[in-house]
Length: 274
Image (cartoon, rainbow, N blue to C red; front, side, top):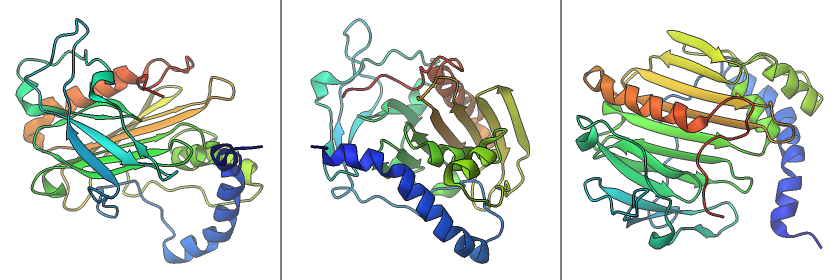
């Protein structure tokens, strides 16, 4: 007998195809120019209902407590209606090097689905969501609102059609593969607002820079890797910080690039607890 989780995984292709075929005409009628993600203003997870925050106590590779960085564990109420949580004693080690000049500007968050995340100090959780197929979205915003800074992490580890949709307009052939998967013809995604910066350093990554009203300049790093058979992967980190914090922005984006590994290896993100 199949478990509920197995059935949910097997149905994701059918769900995606039906949704796209039914909703595309409606979406086009409402807005003919799809946009980039922009600030996390449309989704707001509720603490206590969607996620819980608990003080965390990270250790370095030598087993020594990291005491100079504020650290918080995010327990998430996932798509199966279960709390994803990790006991404090079972948290992953934290061994990322942080420049001394920036150490006072960051804090740590840990979720079971992400491992440790470095976030500007003083920011708070805006969204914490993990779906039935592992797709996740975590957003953080400055204490006084998105106009002063925000960060969003998206990861799609399983739903191939969802990956093609997210990669459409950013990576060659993603749109054709989406249409082939759902056996339908859909409009190709248009990047709005038009990026000021858009380049692909290698076959599976892209860098973007773009502007958005009431937000600091936005920089994004995107990974879409299909090189490993039957194990594609999509991830995107969007970060908006004032120009005065450009060194911090460079450090956070660089750290995330390093975490993603090399195209074609299948090793992206951090190893997390099952």
